[in-house]
Length: 200
Image 1 (cartoon, rainbow, N blue to C red):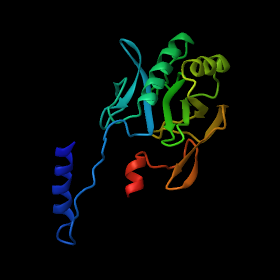
Image 2 (image 1 turned 90 degrees about the vertical axis):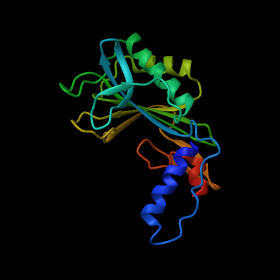
Image 3 (image 1 turned 90 degrees about the horizontal axis):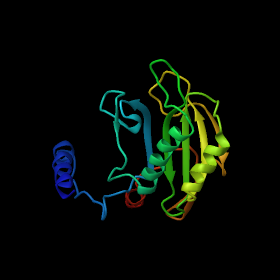
């Protein structure tokens, strides 16, 4: 991490140094597991259902169970959802032929409130056994405060579609930043690094 900060410092001086004095970059005390917004793409390979991130400049999914910068609870919930898909005979969405069910999972967590939102991005509005699926997910992760189904049935690289249905809880989470309370919906912009945002 210290080497990354040094690398960035040199870059900043090179880019901005001729215009102004560049102060030292303020690093994080703990640069691990700070991302309060985590999303995973879902698909299939020879081993079965996978979830992870897209390889750079492609839509090929690199399977990931955990990441050093992502919130640990969020990573665990995504792994649980992947396992539940198989149990409930739900398939990942296939963007080549526009069939299947789950495209992405988006998770947002309040840094101070601890509230957790799970957004299931589906390729269709039909959600077979939705109540049982939600109960199974809450049973394994009672820390979840709300679950939203977002429907994205378009051929697009955008994660979220236009329509959302609240399946459990309020459909949003609340968190605090510098004494102000914010209501955070699935599509709301909110910085992913709380501590960094406070310093900024």
